[in-house]
Each structure stands twice: as structure tokens, then as C-alpha cells.
Image 1 (tube, rainbow, N blue to C red):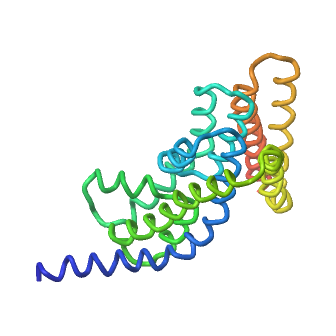
Image 2 (image 1 turned 45 degrees about the horizontal axis):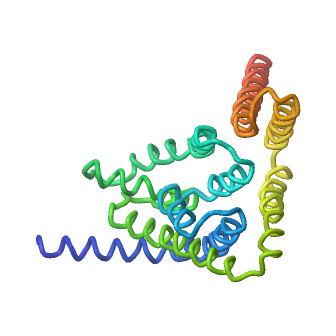
Length: 241
């Protein structure tokens, strides 16, 4: 009976690897682009790979590149990353209700590997999720992101200097490409984006604060205002009903 336990864990780990393969493939071009842009932004290979190893958050890493280019301070970058990734606390708490009982350090390890995509795969599982499955799922996605970041940097290093410098424009193009589909689907997102842009412009042009703090303040203020308006609207609908 005891000999069959490691075998079961191994099978669950392999299932996680298999279900995470499509995520790993999807991460490859995004991580390659990150590595390429990191090179043109001025990061070293070590800094690029280390960011993917430690931070492991696509949107935050792209935002960090923009803030690096603006010369933003470390505190502003840390706060921005925290705000953008705070949803992962909720995702980890939600998965904790579905995962088998496990010791704390193992929970911390697989919680670190939770992303929007791996959460979606794990959350749709009907039965209790095993730790082995989550380790396999997270490992293949994580490995793809880190390795592809390094490869992207190597590709960027081989480009002509003029082309490397012009690639910084691609960072803004990518943000626009990520934002537009969301704007089409949700008026709330559109209002949030417009408010954040307006606040950021006011803070920067009036020189009330640095560009880094302007991003943090604009994000918080716009999110609070939108949620306040949504709450008032919901209360109004409840009263009418």
C-alpha cells in the first residue's frame, strides 16, 4: 500500500505536466518578447532571468520595464507590482479550499506558481486537487517563462543596435494591444483606463509627484472611484427592485 503512494503522486505530477503543456506553449512568445524588450530597455541577462525567476508575473514585468525606462524608484515599482498582483492572494485562497491537506511550505511553493492560466486549469477540476498535480502544472509553465525570457534576451542581443533602440516603442504597442480587447468588452474597464490616464497626466504634467508615484496614485484613485460608482449604482438598483 505504501509503495503505491509514490506511484500515485508520480502519475498526478505527470498529469499536471500534461495539462500545463498548452500554457507553457502560450507563454513562450510572450516571454520571448519580454526578454527581447528587457535587452532594449538596458537590463542585463542576469537581471532579466532573475526577474522572471523571482517575480514571475507577465503584466507586472512589462510594467516594470516601462518604469525602468522612466527611471522610476524601487519603492514605486514594488507598490505597483503589489497592486497589479493582489488578485493572486484571492486566487491562492480560493484554490486552498480545493487542494488536499498539505504542510505549509509546500502550499507556499505552489501558491507562488499560481498564475491566471494555471488557476483557470486547476479551478475547473471537479475533484480534490493533489499537490503533485499543482507542482507539475506550475513547473512546466514556470520553466517555459523563465527559459524563454533568457532566449528572448539572447535574440535581442543579436539585433543591430539601431533596431534594439527602436524596439522600445514595441512596449507601448503591446500595452495598447492588451488594453483594446478589454475596452471593447467592458465599459467599466474603459472608464478605469480613461480615469487612470487622466490622473497620471495631471500628476506628471503638474509635477506634483514623480512619474513612478504618479502611476501608483493614478491606479489607486481610478480603481477606488470606479468601485465607489459601481457600489452606488448597485444600491440604486436594489432599492428600485
